[in-house]
Length: 433
Image (cartoon, rainbow, N blue to C red):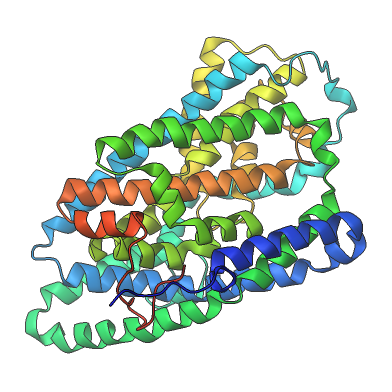
């Protein structure tokens, strides 16, 4: 018996889309009211972050416990890291090439002495947290349970992998714990569904604040840079990720359509973390193995930031061009290498794109850090595009690694991407649509 689809207004993506439009209108016509609604967006993001730790922990631990051999864990991780390293580097190179072709900062002739560095001082201070030593030490939590009450995704990943391995090595003695954690998955994902129903409210508040505080007119001043970044990110998704998807037997456009509710939520909140729990559930529904999803998605949120990488090299060269700073090929290679490292330390840091840019420029003194003041006003608008590109990149990476590992149900993937009715989710109700 065919399943009737609910009316359009009952879909989460339709509700979020309407909320974004209403928020933009309120922020434009009543900017004071719009700016005052910031707590709505912040509260929703905090609600989602509240559940991210348990979702990642349960998915990874139960996934590893279900693997036939422990070496499978290492194999999935290595494959994921190879993929992340290649495409993150490619994104940096793309941003560099586009900056040379488009020349968004050429002709501005900004005098560095006239810039106010105080506007970016906070970001520069936070960028010192992204040193390699600090990054490595930050992965190790204070206690075994502290990651579940914190915001560091890498710490949750680290503890979950260790606990999953220990549980597997425990054999039959660890079986009751595995059964308990498997049972715990259902209520946790039910909670995810409950929280996601509040997404329209969060998207409304976040968009009203963005437009109310910064105004649409701010885009006019640096429209060339913003436009170049959006077009570059779009081409990266359609061409680069599109080719990758085609080689793996699926369409990136169908994948985008499948994740439309999550993408609209990311757009409204300017945070890809707001849709992380839902992404993990949907990728499992699309045929990707639980263990692969549990390892690839959280790791990708720290190591596979395509949108952030495009932004960093494009923005760095924009600042150099705007301030008439000449960069040799050697300087640009150093910039590329430093960006590769600094972008990996952005996990769990609010405003990661702007902060990692500050960290990169601090190590490449040829580009004035004070020049970041030029793009501070439009960074919020570019953060939305960064988050969307990062999100799509991680979804594609999950399917690719699952296929490499032989953990991809192609029939389930085809059914999901073609919009066929799906089975109930881990929470016992239809997946969020």
